Amino acid sequence: MKKLDRLTEASPAVRENREKINEIIKILGKRGSFTPPDPKQVEDYARFYATQKPGINSNIDGEKFCDSYAKKGWMIGKSKMRDWKAAVRLCVRDGWAQRIPSDIARDTKKLRDKAYADAQEQRIREDFTGRILNKNITKAQLDKFCRDRPDVAWLVFELRPDIYENAK
Image 1 (cartoon, rainbow, N blue to C red):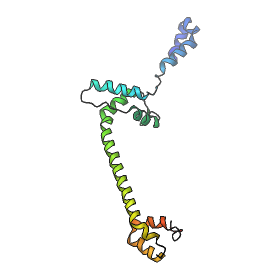
Image 2 (image 1 turned 135 degrees about the horizontal axis):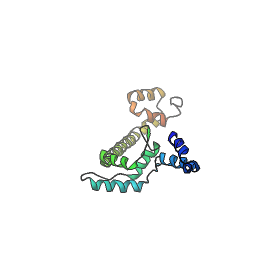
Image 3 (image 1 turned 180 degrees about the vertical axis):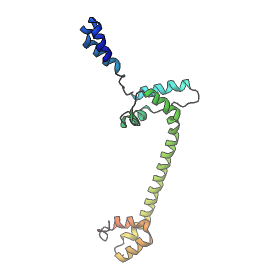
Image 4 (image 1 turned 135 degrees about the vertical axis):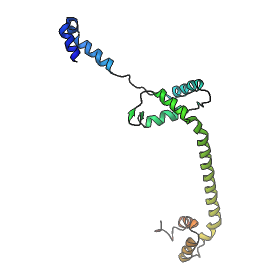
């Protein structure tokens, strides 16, 4: 501002247009504003970048990228993101695309584990339902059964709420 004040003393044209000059200085002083990309732009740019670098997998999920940074408020650490293309390049180099097969393998393993657990539960139900629902069995016998077979106690509580209504 001191330079502008010195100029106003020297030049009558600057004195007349002082407001316009201040407005131009404010505009030039601002950085360009960041606009988040859409998923299609991310995928297209990743594909373009991968063509420049042989051996890099560009199979980035644009939705995943945009959702990941949108939930962080388009922040990288404590700073606002200024260049989303640089973030895409970093993700391509770090191997976001290469993690997709491992994610699929992990998800498949989870599904297998869940299927195994469901099959175990079904087998336990088939093996013990008749014994637990027997009306001649006493609470003491069910307690002993639960101590002997803690893996089946949940089924006892589920099938015999008349005896174990306060046990849950």
